Length: 118
Image (cartoon, rainbow, N blue to C red; front, side, top):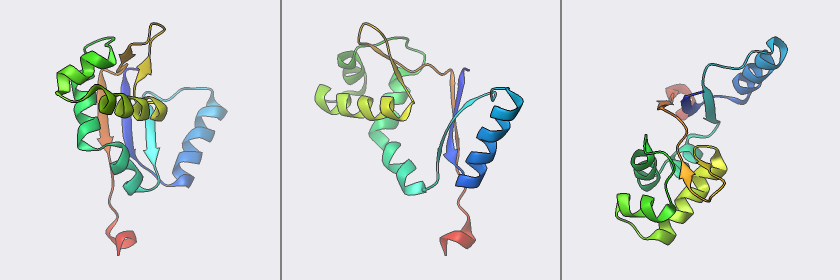
């Protein structure tokens, strides 16, 4: 898969998608990272973490030091952001300790339901 879709879906929709894939044996055309709570999505996708993702896009494997240089930030702070993005499944780590953004495309698919927000 070369596309990651980051969005928000309800638990029932997420379960239905997983069950459908399990029953049919067919993988989805894109990887998904869904949040039930939009606040959690915004915490993960902070401005600085999106800058990290942008700096890594299409660059291949990079050291954390190189990512920090590209975004103009402290290595320790970038290391923390990289760790959270890796834990969430957005980026991968290579065997030699580098990090890579394995997707050619990342799509953001968020819905704000005015009735639920009220």
